Image (cartoon, rainbow, N blue to C red):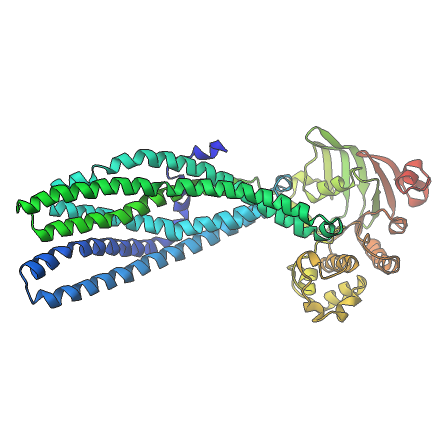
Length: 572
């Protein structure tokens, strides 16, 4: 974690500069508003001079009307321009963080698949939502308050220098001493921000896992176990948050000490000058007021300086996401349907583990092949290579005779209709799940729903507009798979991939679905992965995969007699 603290000064602010360019006019207005706030604050302190000298010493009755009116104008002006400065800064912060979130989300979606597998949902949630939210608060609140406070300090220092430069030098001599502990505190804050963000990611991950598997948690009576895991993560988060708070608030006692020394010195030496009549009472109290008013902005600056050091850590994490390697889509585009797929001596491994070994097979146009084999045999890895999730370590994968590495993976995926075992249902309406971003065509939609035997839709409240809930939890497993099949049918890709597409269906429903599947298989190039015999009976070719190799290949009639096939289906 320590390396997170080794960041260049103003690293986060420099990262944000390109995002600020479209808001030049708004930034100028914001700075002008901040300047007015700073000047009016200094003038409020200076007002003590005429109040004491003209009213209480000289007893000027004309000033009795002018000064109160001036004070009202002064404070109202400061309030209005402070509102403008904070509001405009907030609008800039909201716009910038919207752009950052959109870019991060796009980068994650289009990142290479293996990289995404290494990250949990909690990581993405923390990065895109939580961390960017903190950046927005920094832009909208921390930076404006920091700048306003710096300008106010400059204005007040100018004021006390004007009133009495000797006393002013005495008052500000303590300021450089504060910088040493501030640098130490900033380093500690960076470290603990990093640690706190990591534990927050763990917390979110615990919530996701517990509620995504709530049925398992309850059936196994593991609510207390999950609670303990969550509380342990919560304890870690609390520890780092407390440490972070300690270092953030450590500036207060330091500030109180040095400010008290400064004010005490001014009271003593300034009082001497008043007694000696080398300084008027009005000048002294205006000076003292300005000095005491310096305390608040200096405290804000020191505290916000620590907050800005936290910004560096957040930006580092965002930049890591934005640097994710992207899938290549600037290659040759597949402009016609997928007709043939050929594996030539294809091998694939993950780390040191060999997943596939020199595979050789070909899928012809409108042909249906079935991949069978035990769990871990390599069937899903074959699909992953076709989908472009992974790249082979050796050999070639040809689509329509062209090496897949020379083609835009997006254009290949445009030609694939896919149904997987989990169905992949989104928290949206049934119609939105079936269309999945495609334009609505009534005839196509009815055909897809009919062929997938989704008659149950008519029995649901709102029918096609029925919201299915997160992961389709308001539907049964069989209903989810039929929705997924309808989605694949509606897309009408030239290659159909059915990965355990009927695993959640009862026998009667599966028999009905088989008619639809056979309709697909007769007119499309199809790859089927299944553990049920009736799903692969009509396949043109059956490949038995074992330990990353094709050990048997042929028609169902010939392959079903082999020992490898019987062993896979437990027929021996």
